[in-house]
Amino acid sequence: MKIVLVIFILSFLGTSCNNNQRREGYFSSHERLKHFFQNPNDTLQLPFVGIKDFETREGIAGNSTPYWVVEIKKNRDVYFYFGMIIHQEDGNTKDSLGIYYAGKFKKYIKCDFEQMDNFPRYYEISRDTIYEVDTIGNQLYSTDCCKEINDNPCPCKSELRKSETHTFIYSISHR
Image (cartoon, rainbow, N blue to C red; front, side):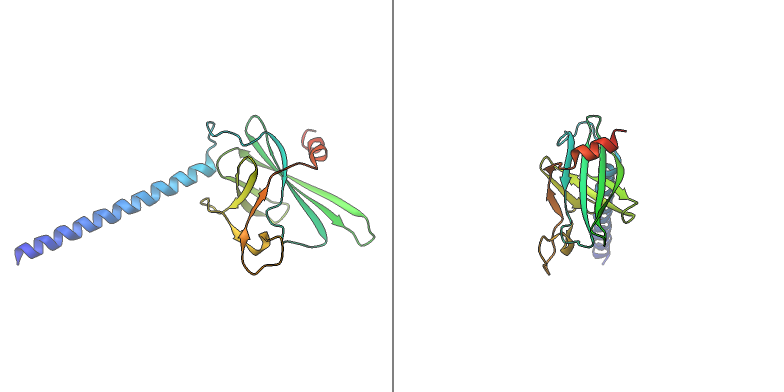
């Protein structure tokens, strides 16, 4: 009976140690992801330097035409520009632009679009593509991201295109 009790206690202790190791692994993994958002990594190569257009949520429509631009500078500063061409009832258009500094370039970039919807968005940028991700780096899927009406969520990603609004953005951002 004593041997069975000793084996039971040892197996219980061994199991609880393993569970603690898993929890420690979870926290260290969580801390590593937190590090990607908070700390710039100077060894991470910039995907490009310049200004590029993108549209990760093509399914959102209204009485305006939104445009999104990302700029990465040589000093690793990242800016997002959210512009809107508002189609007025009299047939004229009105342009508005918000400029958002997102910090130094890192693997995952957080940007708070205060003027737009006061909603933080997280991005991962490669050379040719930008992805919307969640707070731990998983790619987002949404019906808002579908080019056509669809009941199934689509990936929230976009090809990065040479900016058609480059001259306009450049003149505003370099005043």
